[in-house]
Length: 277
Image (cartoon, rainbow, N blue to C red; front, side, top):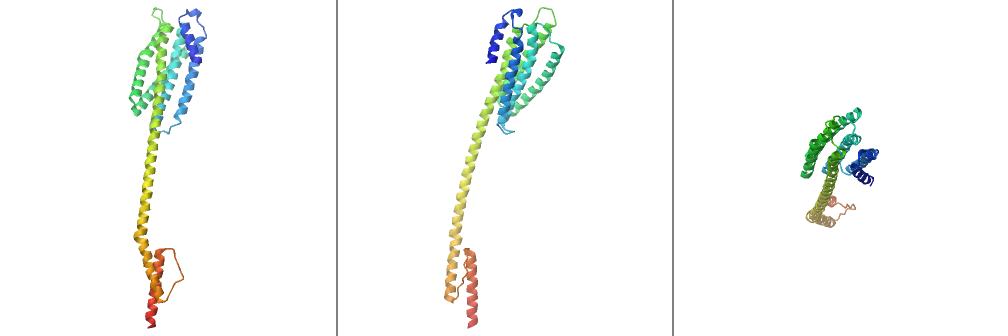
């Protein structure tokens, strides 16, 4: 709301003679814009934390963050020239030094955006970065240089404050649009990743159920084909021992152990019977 109110006041003051303009308006405008940009940066940084490192959605959010960083640097860079035009006086040397530092940062951020969009391979993001980079470096940057040059010359070819803002403001707004586009892509990619994760989870659950069913069938087969026949053998052996007149008081719940014990007892009984004859 504050930025919107200031923007309205700036648009109103632009048409006024320089002496009739609010001398503090430019400072308030740029301070408010920088605060607004920093708030966007905090929000973007917070959103990045919602995604795991390495995810495509994270890279899309990094594009938004880099665009915001670049918007911040370009905004301060532009503000130095705009303030100088507002007072019709060349900026002091320290401010020119700040501009050189900012432009070094801008160059690194453009490289980062090119790298990230290359990884993402999202056509509209790549095109937006390419278009915005061209506008910044071939339209806005030369206008800044021409404006600074006009402040140091008296050839009558000066750039007015309104002419400068008519070009610089829309270009700066493009950075915000790039941020929004990158955030939208990040959300869409995150939702797609979540849907795919849910699908994989359902597939894994289905595979687990199938494996459990196969194990149950295998267990049933073993019981029918192995355990039951062994139990029948055990019953026959017990009956033979009973007929032989010997019984064991030991009992095991394991079919193999019961058959083994019954066979041993039957063998002993038969040996003892043969020896008695």
